[in-house]
Amino acid sequence: MVAERHEPMTTPSASGPSPSVVAPAASSTDVATSGKVLSWVLRQSRRALVLWAVAVAAVSAMYASFYTVMDGPEMSAMIEGMPEGLVAALGYDRIGTPAGYLESTVYGLLGPILLMVFGITLGARVLAGVEEDGSLELELTSGVSRRRVLVERYVALVLQLAALTVAVSVAIMVIVAGIDMEVSFGGLAAAGLGMLLFTLAVASVAFAAGAVTGRRAVGLAAGAGVGVLAFIADAFAGMLDDGRWLEALSPFSWYLMGDPLVEGVHVAGFGGLLAVSVVALAIAVTVFDRRDLGV
Amino acid sequence: MTASNDVVIRTDALVKDYGSIRALDGVDIEVRRGEVFGFLGPNGAGKSTMIRVLLDQLRPTAGHAEVLGETPREGGPGLRARIGYLPGELAMSGRATSQELLEHQAGLRGGAGRDRIAPLAERFGLELSRPVRALSKGNRQKVGVLQAFMHRPELLILDEPTSGLDPLLQHEFLALVREAQAGGATVFMSSHVLSEVEEIAERVAIIRQGRIVDLDEVATLRHHAGQRVTLTFAAPIDAAGFRSLPGVEDVEVEGTTVRCLLRGEPDALLKAAAAHHVVRWSAEDRELEDLFLDHYRVPAEELRADEEVTVDGR
Image (cartoon, rainbow over all chains, first blue to last red; front, side):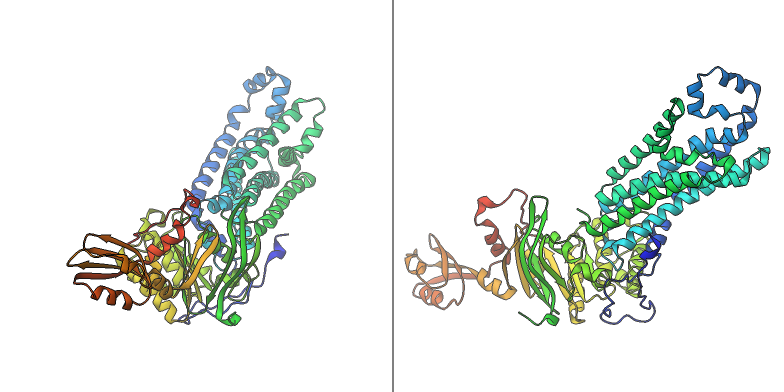
């Protein structure tokens, strides 16, 4: 639903002396070439992105490499002493397998939490934050449509989350190859994709809530609320005797319920996550196009 | 009504509500091609609301607005690229330098104006390599002025343009406005300081609480404003003869000195004065500020606390 949005564009030549008055452009079409907003946002955020990528890669690699320590009898004994529900909630029931270990540490906990924090903050800031502090005003009053501003800023969010996912995935792949864990790269790719889709869904909620209200705080609250509820619902689903209905409600469960590290892409679960983002984006575009800006 | 081709901005009974607050209450304005139009009012009178409707940031509650022959919404980005807009409060965040921000702004208009960044920056003494968020208010305003003028737009919409600029740069700014006008541009500038626009505007609209309370040529406004005349005589005189003179108002007598407000020709006043021994006289144009204040003072009790009129501004 994003792809068809592209409108015909006029691209007046940038070379040569400008006439005393700019020639009338065809109305209601973007004057700026596509990607101008996107590249601007990415250039503005590259420093923060690099720092985040280094940090999440380092933490992921560190946790993954602890597997050599955890993969022993002491660990199994400790888990045996823990209550069953807690073990299941933490995902420790399968911690003895390489895939189970990676899932309970990196893919089921640290990765999604770190990426969620990044995604929610950026999702609320990249549109609503700059609208609220007024620094989006020049962009919104220039030769770009509201829709293009919104979509390109959303794409900037997607690309940055994807970059962090790649950073995590590469770090894990290096460790997996280095300490010879039995996890397929296909499984890692599927889990990475799932983690991206889950954190993007939460970030999209933050983005859309911000786009609808023009308030960064509302975006942050909506994103954090959905994210935390998703985690809680998933944890309870594991502890309850019949928790499947809770799993059906939690986007976090949609991400891990198909066991992507072993089984690969879970079409229904991943599709559901993608649908959340698509719906959030559609709502954001629709409302942002109609409402008063910067009030 | 003027032919539509000669009207650059037209509003028709324009109304804008924010919730239960009416910010614009039936504004009718026509700005003609090539003129400099002053839009005056105190803070909170609806100036920025009006401007933000023209730029399609706000959508009218009722009524109609047309800019360069199109409604702001229909015109969209194509229309906005033909406008140079200076926001009243220019917020800039991020690490970008002035150079980067201005180039980005040019890019958003299809590259128009990129070639004028360097010369205009030099003219206004703006250091392009410094990050925008570290700039002083005056330097930020320079960035705002540059991005508004650099692509030689057909229409300039300037919200409180000279705030933050020192007198020398205000002068340079006015020169830039005149050049734009000579190049065929139309200029719509708002201010809460009348002296700021009276030098350059041909016509002025005064807005108060969302309504246009006066719209006239600056010369006419000035005529209405009249002159403050002070006459000093050799001996105390009877003021009664002056009170009845045509065009003479607010006569005050203090010993041998008579002060009054004169509107229109001074002939009758001079002849009446000549009957006595005049030792000293002066006639000063009343500042348009005074007239501006007339509009806000009556009735004074209606004036809301947040309406403040700045009189000096220089």
